[in-house]
Image 1 (cartoon, rainbow, N blue to C red):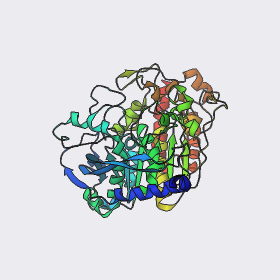
Image 2 (cartoon, helix red, strand yellow; image 1 turned 180 degrees about the horizontal axis):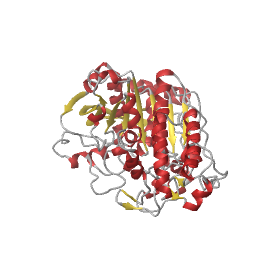
Image 3 (cartoon, rainbow, N blue to C red; image 1 turned 60 degrees about the vertical axis):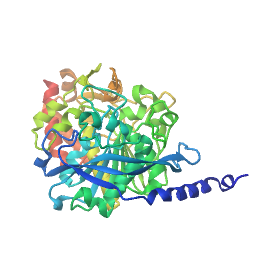
Image 4 (cartoon, one colour; image 1 turned 135 degrees about the vertical axis):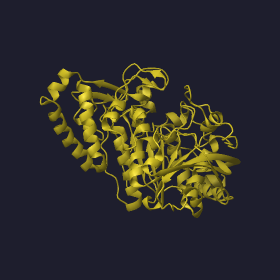
Amino acid sequence: MGKMAILGSFGHAILAALLLIPSMARAELGVKLVPGKPVLALAAFDLASVGYSVEEFFISGTASSYKPVGDLGGDGRWTVAPAASAPFTTRIVVVRPSEPSKFNGTVVVEWLNVSIGMDVTPDWSHTHRELIRSGYAYVGVSAQKVGVVGGGMMSAPGMLPLKKADPERYGPLDHPGDAYAMDMFTQVGTLLKGPAGTAVLGSLVAKHVLATGESQSAGYLTTYVNAIAPTAKAFDGYLIHSRFGGAVPVEGTFTPGSSLATMAVKIRTDLSVPVLTFITETDLVGIGGRQAHGYLQARQPDSDRFRAWEVAGTAHADTYLNVGPIDSGLVPVETLAKAYAPTSNVFGMTTGKPINAAPQHHYVMQAAMAALNDWVVANKAPPHGSPISVTSGDDATFVLDQNGNVKGGIRSPWMDVPTARLSGIGQTGPGMGALFGVTESFDSAKLAKLYPGGRDDYLRKFDKALQAAVKSGFILKADMPEIHALAAAMFLNSAS
């Protein structure tokens, strides 16, 4: 019997730790400021108008790929070791307060999503209002090769990776492949937390660094938390947004049908830093209701370092795609209400039904970001969220109320005082159409039955539900005035 067989899992852990030492003793990262406007859709408004600056940097170094040490089980307690090394040059985009005194000390680092064949910023989009008003800095990382050279799961007109969008500007980028993405992400986090962070943050000194990622990026972060974070220690907390049930192989290649993508993978329970997961209805049951792929199979109880927020009435993606780019905090509420309007056209696709149009996804995500930061900075744990109600058995389905909306989960006033049936499932259409959920607006007769006193009756009930959501910690008090005004505007739209 070999020595490793005798040592068992304890020996695997020691071996992995020893193998990780060389990868940490590497040369300092190269950092180069790239003047001009980066190719990354952050906002349709000028960020300088809200007191923020935007800069782009090329980051160069040597990254490690990884290989499993032992089996990768569903409990997430994974051990890995470096496999190979390769040089890389990627880019980061830094968004920070122009006035250093307004910096709150926390940097949010997003693993940019590449599912449509280019870098996009879903977590910046959903949370930027909170980031800006509370003084966070933000860094978007081109962690995956698709964002640099292309080849995502979905192609759409105008969706160009960096090297095609601006060959001259991004000619120096050299991505060795997604097997190296996790170590590249680690090195960016380590850079920001260390003294060299001022090379990209100016005079700002980061006290805390949080990692976030949505959808495919959430799959990578799930693997990162389970396999890389315990030894890398590059981030102080994680917001994993819209993951499904599986994870990405440690070798780095995301394949929807792979064994890890379809296996139920929990977040490891021996966490040293907080992890908050945000789960929509779509994520819970999987695309097209394939429960074997959904987060439902990977559900786990909250712990002292883990929270799961399952948010009722939300879809993996929704009409905030139309709102986020214009949402500066200075836009009239009537303009926002029109942008939220249900539509059947998204990314050049025509869906079978109007897509999910409730604002709750955005507002609860802002609360999630604030809660994670409080957890890290002040050791104030977030509230526990109730799970979304599903039937028992292998073919679990949502338990619905009399209005066709799901029961349970984190509640918002759009669910408890509804003007529509809102869901993360039931959509049809080409490509990724199933990710956008549905809106089925109530007709005037239904609204009159629910709110016999009309608009005033509706708003009175809505405000009561809003106050309850704020008291529970799932919507921020700072958002209350806007939400009230938005509810009034959207009720008029739905009743017209």
